[in-house]
Image 1 (cartoon, one colour):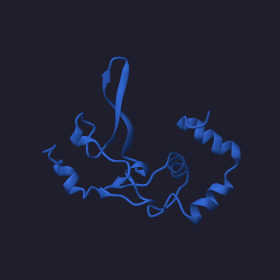
Image 2: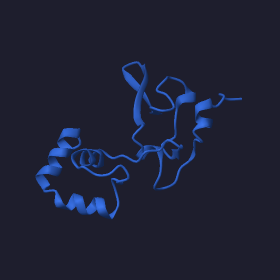
Image 3: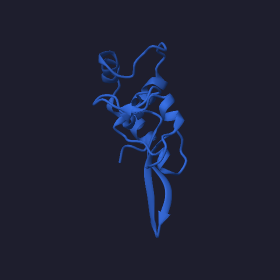
Image 4: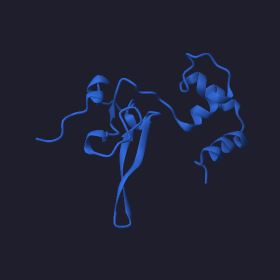
Length: 120
């Protein structure tokens, strides 16, 4: 009757997410992990670095779910946080973060996006 659930998913309390908190927003999320090939096409499925990057249905994750190891990260927020000297409890989003981002000029932001390969 299907595949048994991984023990790590049970330990991490893997469950349905919220509109503002999902696996697809997490830093451990791998959106298209290649698990095999059919003819010349690559078969890719979502995976989590914490749960495992192994092939198989047990390691497949739903981007709309969440677990207890959730970490919000966006490429721009990670780059900004690395360039600033903030305390450990600094959140890379919210009103303070937006004020700091407004201080950066357009060229710096474009350079940060190009470094991550997000700007065309």
